[in-house]
Image (cartoon, rainbow, N blue to C red; front, side, top):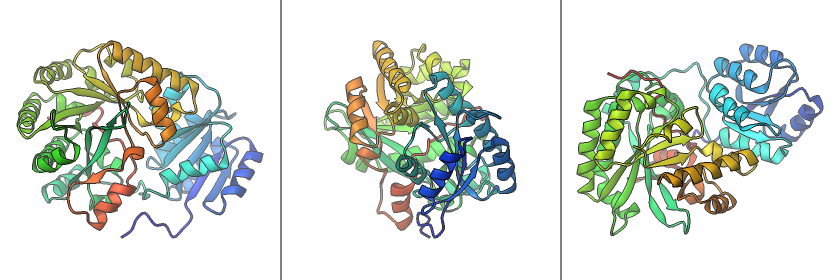
Length: 410
């Protein structure tokens, strides 16, 4: 089944109190999408309640009379949590933008005035190149557990490059579930791992496949003198499990013997990253020579607080921050400040979500150390490609490999 091909026009709900703008966008995009417009946020929510399975994306203006765009998208998320949410903003503060990310979990923020062409490109990113999965579908930890044990979990590798010359720096290992992804999105699959010990099984499964693919990983991404730097996402709830952390240390030592240097990326969104158990075990991993990166830096509330700790070896700038940096001066200033502070503390800075030459050039001028994104290559299969694998490598969106937030693993 080729899920990337659509035989219908996706439905877009656009909410803005500027009715002239709504009419203009509806005319311009009517050949590509079914545009549903509402000048009232309350009316838009009523429409969503009555049409939960219809929308494929929601576009909302930040400034509206009944409620602001962040409040609207926050409520929309409760009704249709799996639908892409796009916020149109004017010249607003970085605090407001952080608020939009943390509260409404927006998929993208676009600065007004935005061209119809730019809006279409963003909508295509979240719709045309990704399957839509209605929120009525549910994936359970038991289903994921069964998929892992039955060989339904695969890994792909996305290259990281040095910022100065774009030479190979290593690769990030990403999980794919070809079978489950015919029915569920990656985000749904990872969210189902929250508050459940299956996340440890998922991680150990990834590491086992890394071990099996060690010769190929070394050949593709290695350096003759230093070996291949391979990063894997790690859940905060896995880090608070001392037994599992010791397993990770043993695995890293085993992979070093195979010329692979294992690194872990830990999302900054979870409060667990500030717990005493996390800090103790993170320091243990550092003492074992394992580099830890703050993943999704700039996407949540813990970013600055985490810079105070001495067990991280680097940070990975959130891809949304990388995208917005090119159009929002406040975000660009935040990236510049982050790079400066990180370097003062001896941290490596990696920028995710780099998709064009202009962004790569700007990040190089700012001083990031490494980059990752579609501009440098899509995730690569590590075995002979099947039809499912090829779709996953080329069409899967750069969904955050979520390291469960707020989990309570045993």
